[in-house]
Image (tube, rainbow, N blue to C red):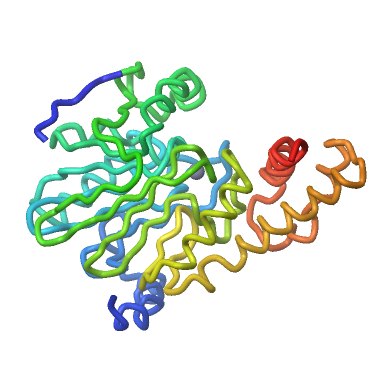
Length: 313
Ligand SMILES: [Zn+2]
C-alpha cells in the first residue's frame, strides 16, 4: 500500500434544505452536481445503480467541507474517475488545498477514489479498524474493481488511512471544526461520522440509507444501537451515505428504523419457530419489498446475516 507523507444550526438551513434540493433538481447544475447543502458543506448525490450496473462507481453520497485554511473531502467515490471528478469540482470551487480525506468506512464506493487526492498530501482519516480492513480487502478490490482503478492497478492504487480514529477526533479546517466519531460494529466494523460543528451538519456515511436498501455488513444489533445514539444528537442537516438529505431524525431514519426493526423481530421469530435459514430468507421482511430500491439484490443477504448473528443469541 502506498504511504503518503504526513505533511500534512441553523434553523434557516433546516427550512431551506428542500429548497436547495428543489433548485438542484430544477437544473441549477454546478460542477459535478455539487450542491451547498449547508454553509460550506458541498454534496454530490450518488445514483441508485446496482453493484454490477453502469454508474456503480458513483452510487455513494460524497462531497467536501471548506474551512478558511483548507478543505476536508468526505468519501471519494468508487473509482479513480469519480474521485477525479470530485477533485476537479473542488478546484473550481476553491483554491484551498485538501488537507483531509475522510473515509466513512471500508466499502468500495466510498474509498476507491482516494488515490487522486495524494497530490495535496492530505491526512487520510478513517476508523481505527480501517487500516486492517483496507489490507484485507486489497485483493478483492483489485479483482472486482480492476476497471475502476485506472490504467495499471496495483496495491499502490488503494490508499488507506494515515490517521485513525478510535473514539472521537476534532480536526480544524480554519475557523471550522469537524468532530469525527468512530462507531461500534454496525453497518460495517469501520463506520465513522463527521459533524460540522458550525452548521450542525452530520455526514453519517452508510450508517444511514434512504431510498436504497440498507446493507448489513457488520452487526444488526449494533446498528440498531447506533440509531438510538443518533436520535440523541441535535443536528440541523443529516447527509446519509445513500439517498436524500433530511433536516430531522424522524424524516431521515423512519424507513431504515422500520426495515432493520422488522428484520430483527422477524428473524428472531423465525429462529424461535425452528426455521432453517433457507426458509427464513424467503419469508422474513417481505413486507418491506416495495419500500426500497434494489430490494431483490440485497435483502436475502441481509436476512442471512441477521440469521447468523441472532441464531446463538
Ligand atoms: Zn457501505
